[in-house]
Structure formats: structure tokens, C-alpha cells
Length: 167
Figure 1 (cartoon, rainbow, N blue to C red):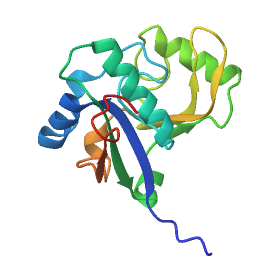
Figure 2 (cartoon, rainbow, N blue to C red):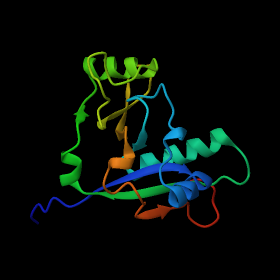
Figure 3 (cartoon, rainbow, N blue to C red):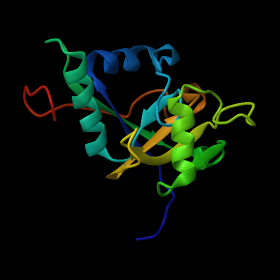
Figure 4 (cartoon, one colour):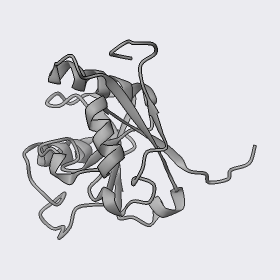
């Protein structure tokens, strides 16, 4: 099989009400949370199982009988992603944990010498405040998702099988 540089499939775990809002109105920056691993923005993962766990966790945390776990899938053109200002951590290390500590403290712009945040940050999922990561899981932050080709509309919605609330 030859490399064709096809789209990157990413997943966003959420609840069904938020998924409906995203489908109808797009990604809403007012819903972004501060003090997260890579800062304020829209988070996705390349690992479907990780997105399912994020969806489960969100539904359990939010409670309520109307909430069900849901995962939105997106197809992102790699060539367009490559044009964005990005920061990538392949492994956890001192620089990775320094950035997480900086962002978890609620600071903006990914550093005091950056006038604007990185458009994309890739890396492992931390178990902050411990200096540990979750094996076989990644996270991707889009600080300005409105300007990312492929994030305007999910390509698919994944729900738990049958009438189950969680994956």
C-alpha cells in the first residue's frame, strides 16, 4: 500500500446535547475551558476509544437523565493542517510538563514570548497534576477551530450501541 496523505480522522467525545449544538451551530468558543493541558480551545484525539472515555466521563460528571455519550468524528486534510502554526510533543518530557503547568495555571498564548497561541498543539494525555500520561492516548488542541478546514461539520456521529448511555 502506498502513502496517499489522506485525511486525518479525529474524534471529539461529548454528550448528545452538546453534539447537537455543534452540529447545528458549529463549535462555540464560549464553551472552551481554561486551565486545561494545552490551554483554551477545542480538543480532539486520534484514538476513538479515548474520545469514548471522554464522552462517558462528561456524561457522568454532568449527570441528568437526558444526557447520553456521543463522539463526533472529523476528517481533516493533512496538507491544510500542515500549514497551521503548531507545536508537537511526541513523548512526555520536561518541556511537555512545563507547558502543561503553564496552561493549567490559566495562562494564555502558550508562553510569555508568543504574541498568539499556537493554532494546533499535539501530544500525550496527561494525568495532571501527576507527571504521568495515559498510554495509547493523544490529544490535539485547536485554539482557533473556526479557521481549521474540516472542523466546520462532523463527518460522523458515534453513539453507544442499543439504548446504552455509555460506551
